Image 1 (cartoon, rainbow, N blue to C red):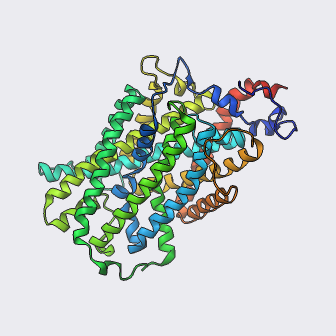
Image 2: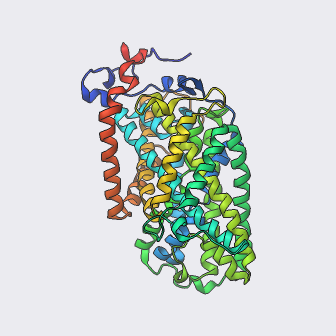
Image 3: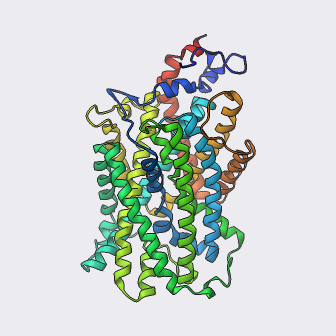
Length: 493
């Protein structure tokens, strides 16, 4: 039975009971209400069809490939051979936050991910800020990854039929092009899969994940043949500052491990499977990243790395002296990066679905098709927005902007897990962060440290993004919040 009529845990009136404007900003949505509303949308409900295997594949699909296939070429010049250490640092930062995600996903199994966790623990304004950061994390990273997809598509076309898409149609303005057509195409293909339903999308993603893991294993088998220990003689040529800067950039490659938490309302056994999927996927991803980065630097001197997104395919061609292997890897990368676009786009639509249900964004994002059990209008709008963004913005700027939004959201999750432990200690938890609150505090500190390693321009972009989000909230969400309009029974007493 839902405990919606219970008094606040601390025995004092909740801040949300006050009619003042400040109190409204701090209104918290009870966990029981979040869970009770799970899956419900305008005109229909999401369908529970995903098990542990599918959830793990969603997290791996949303993460694996982004850093290795796309951002590695940008990170190596910053850190040198110590880029492997940068991957470990970024992975540790992700791990501390992953532990917090795992506990909250098992306790609050809903689609909103960290947005919903913040709503239940820190109030509506913080939840909105977190949700706005998630839009940056998911929506913009879809566009960033789609840009890299176009690079590998050209590599594949060149190796198979000897032609490439003209630069004017394969690169955004600022990178020598006019319009990135391949980036738009891959987003539209992902949209088509998502329109068919969560189960169908999960099946397609699983196939693509298997292909991408196979491609990275193949790269390691071939790349190690060209391994030269001399490439590691000067392990940290740019110092710890370079390692930290590369780690902040590479954190972009861990974005997506939390994607399973956005499937909370479509999982068969969310409380059991979500924590397992999050931690299992992160372990697999980190191991592969470090292994591939170590082989890549061993096979190619770090000074020769450029920001070319197709660097792994080039390394395989250089090692073997044949273009076949590089072309094969390019083919696998086209599949792999498409799966990132698919799963991250999925996560973005589900977060907007949860925010729409709370009245903070327009109702159209919460409408569910009775036929497919998916938010089709939501998917169409988000896909078109991300596709146009991918066609118009260079990759590097997108990656750093995405990283800072993600780090901020992760920092809030580490706070949320401590707050929920203190305010609702009696709640059943299928996973508990060990050594809490110490580990969440370390996770919070890591996030702030890596945010500080990002450039001033990135901070300016983030500040502008947050300012726009606050304006939208006060003009729209603050006035239309369903929690403020119809408080839960526990809030009315």
